Image (cartoon, rainbow, N blue to C red):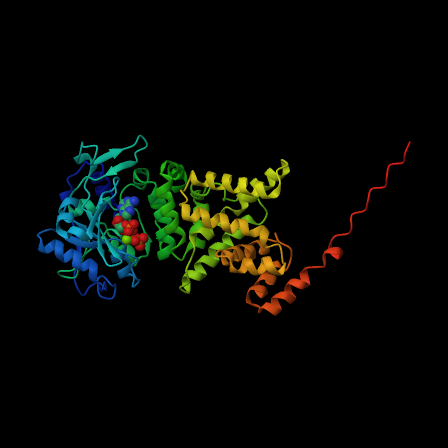
Length: 452
Ligand code: ATP
Ligand code: MG
């Protein structure tokens, strides 16, 4: 991005210059290869057409344009318009729901697909209204609902490659921030002054990691520079929003790289403080997390489903062990101490990223099944294989086995057992179950005390 443009954008964001001075680079049909039909943009284009027919300005924007230009399949579609939320609601009626307080926008539903429609955002210096614009003492935007024009909207977006607009009427791409060039150079660059933009919304630091990993783009030097020193700002983000971000970070098929970068930039400790190597001192815990990330990516790559609760169960397994071991050292028996350790581990984590109830139940079950996997008696083993969480519990067992936390061969035994027919299962169980009298030596009676 030319220095002149950066300077201008910074100045406009601070409210110093009239935004009219920003000129768009229009890439006409035929000079780019964004193909709306290859990108499955039918419904999003319908939304744009409905808005333009009603006299509003409207474009496809964000990830769908970026991914389309990179020949990748967009995850979802975003539309940007000068229509205000109430006007959008009036136009789309029952198919439209207005959501969000910090950032108000419209969801338009087509069957199972939801198109996100946002009104052009403008500069905050243009508003004194607290419902529209509000900033915390740390410079964080608590309300980002000041409306503006297309060029203002472009520079309020996070990265240059996310600020490209597609106009279906003439198949043109509109670019105010040199995003098209950055796409070609595979460069991820935050718009404006990086430190200020991270302060406005610290989640942008997580988005920087997510997009650079997902797109395999290089984060520009200036965009990268302030991340470590601003990382603590993530502590100000509500736990519910961080939960949503964590989902996106780890479910995009590049969890291994994302986790590596989160650690590198000191961001991980604000999401999973008890899982980072410094705190997660249980032997093998760090390797288990890395392994789970690799497995997650491999499953996504071959189109298999992912249970995010499983990843939480792995991330928090080390911290859980540390609690559990301590409680047992304090004299609490294994079963109640496991329950207490689970409670503490989940409560501590929920301070940082909320864990929805349905996840809590699954994580708890995966953990509770671990001690039961040590028993290789035929009846309980057969019941366990039928358990709804057996598969996830078994996957965790395999990771624990790699970390040398389980008796050797236990994972392999379960691998064979779950696939064996009932007779083979009996034989497998028999190999590990000795008759009672052989297993436990008979208790010797204490010699009677000599009578005195
Ligand atoms: P994907 O949907 O593939 O995760 P995306 O770029 O579409 O990527 P969304 O979260 O859907 O990301 O957001 C849509 C667009 O809204 C972004 O491309 C960006 O232009 C803008 N945007 C989203 N979040 C922010 C933010 N925190 N700050 C500034 N702009 C943002
Ligand atoms: Mg999107």
